[in-house]
Picture (cartoon, rainbow, N blue to C red):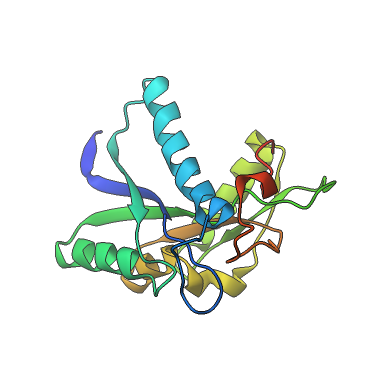
Length: 183
């Protein structure tokens, strides 16, 4: 049964900063977060290429001002709530391209919220079935990316990130040369 009023959001933020001062004029942002935007666009491209016809609406969204306080996603989720949009799930991609050289145990951290634990468990099962990645669930940073705003407005959300700390985070070295796209 088609249900175009049911919405699934796939998103990522496109802003980047350097250091704690909030400078963004020279922030390259390859991993944080061009990698998430690229993944969001790639999902859209592959679905289109495969002729996928969803029964529900899928919205692909690039959010602004995540680094300055989740302003873009907060505005989006607030307006969705005010307009009673039926968002079933928000999938957030943030910092998904860095792995240390020589690293072979690739894993994705799938963060969930109090209302999306079952969705996270399903995502972990899909990860095992369809990828060469293992998955973990470490919710330590769940309040620091766009998915959190959706949770605050009672929408279910998942947040995907690599399970590796990036030493180039918020530096001028957050370059594509320091990302690992082969994984």
